[in-house]
Image (cartoon, rainbow, N blue to C red):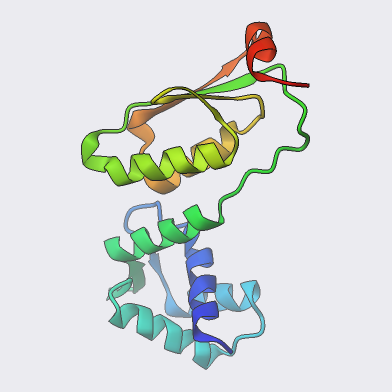
Length: 173
């Protein structure tokens, strides 16, 4: 089996759990979770990949098991960002729009750029430099993105209930 594939599976398994501070995994329970996610890998392949991730500084041994390092959290976040997508159920505009306002500091410029790129990819329309709207119900996906990038204090998402003017200006149904 390909080594990079198992690493991706490990990142997928860790994605939903690493945001809790101090999470420690038993090596055996992590191996079992990985085998359920991807049954094609043998236990020794998973253990070899986990050892490599420890050696490369993504995981560290702790009393009671393995934890994800800061470097590991960054790698898992990159994986999650890359695989996060939004496909609107239809191209028809929703009468309740999403308004996204953000003020991400200059010290987090790279995160601001990633955030802006992703919401543009999801066809959100730019109103001002840090204000976007979307006719699609993408609020949950926006918050997943905000959590992945760890920019919660800097982003606000609103649902606009009265969007008749927006419909006529921005929506071509």
